[in-house]
Amino acid sequence: MKRYRLALLPTPLHRLPRLEAALDSGPLYLKRDDLIGFGLAGNKARALEYLLGAALAEGADVLVTGGAPGSNFAGAAALAARVAGLDCEVLVSGVPPDRLPVTLELARRAGATLRFTGADRERLDELVDAHCAALAAAGRTPYAVPRGGATPVGALGFAAAARELACQLESDAELAGPLGTDAVVVLPTGSGASLAGFLAGRAAVGATWRTCGVSVSRPRELVGPHVLGLAGRCATLLGTPAPTEADLHLRDAVGPGFGRVTDEDRRNVQLALCTEGVLFDSTYGAKAITAVIELVRAGERAPLVLWHTGGMPSALKLLAVPGVTG
Ligand SMILES: Cc1ncc(COP(=O)(O)O)c(C=O)c1O
Image 1 (cartoon, rainbow, N blue to C red):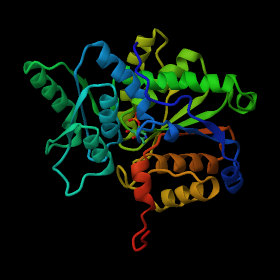
Image 2 (image 1 turned 120 degrees about the horizontal axis):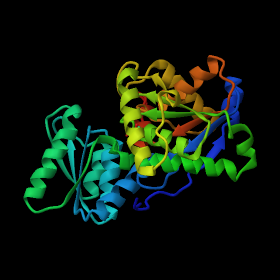
Image 3 (image 1 turned 45 degrees about the vertical axis):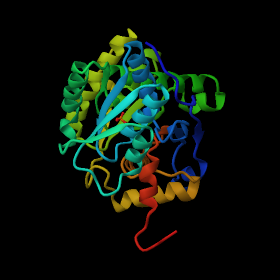
Image 4 (image 1 turned 30 degrees about the vertical axis):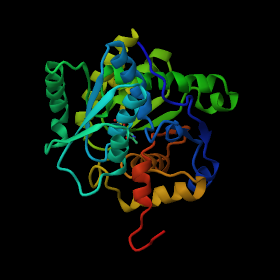
């Protein structure tokens, strides 16, 4: 499968000794896709390398995708299309806001056409397909990408990430000791593309790490079958065994709603900031660090690897305290 390089890989993997001391926990590690080095794409740079590779291989001239106004993926996809020489059209749910959020401003500056659909975000994938059909009828060669890049091809990005993690462990004895066999990898999960790809890649490299998806937008009963279906189709592309239900552990972390944090999330984000100097966003990272801390408090002593997936635009929002100005 063709890959169009965007990211600086491997992303760092390091221990969090001060957070461990504060929590009196077992070994904690952070995998730094927030430092992936392409725009503000975070983990989404991985999926986009394969999606752009496929779009170019098919001779596409325009990438069409969709997202909610705060979608990190939409901004990253627009930037990736631009650097790869493709046009980009982004279908956005709802109506135009007074001021574009950072993610859409990034898409706009990358030259993407933004089309506000007035529709719910759940309808965007079908609107993307319809828009591609209209573009094709007008003589263009579109490449359709559903929300979050959640296709078997997009999932290949995190299949490669599982291989990357395995290589990091192999080449570093200090990591291989604690993380080689019984680590738990905690991965925030929205569209499911990253988790699906990671499960497929984990099976492909024969790793035994447990994998915990922290579902931030949908209940577990919906996410599980969706992720396993996508993981199976990704494994078919790889020619490797399909992950099974036994490989998948999910935590329901929707809480007060998508992108909405609890006081506990805020305290945990503050703890990570003040012990390790790491920022987390409100939609994904805050819920993932809370999941890690809950696992520790429930007595988990196995080494935990928290996959930091980025989300910097909303990390800055989380720092904005009412009444305090910079
Ligand atoms: C910062 C961040 N983390 C995690 C995710 C979830 O990844 P996925 O959609 O592959 O489940 C996203 C999705 O957009 C994201 O932007």
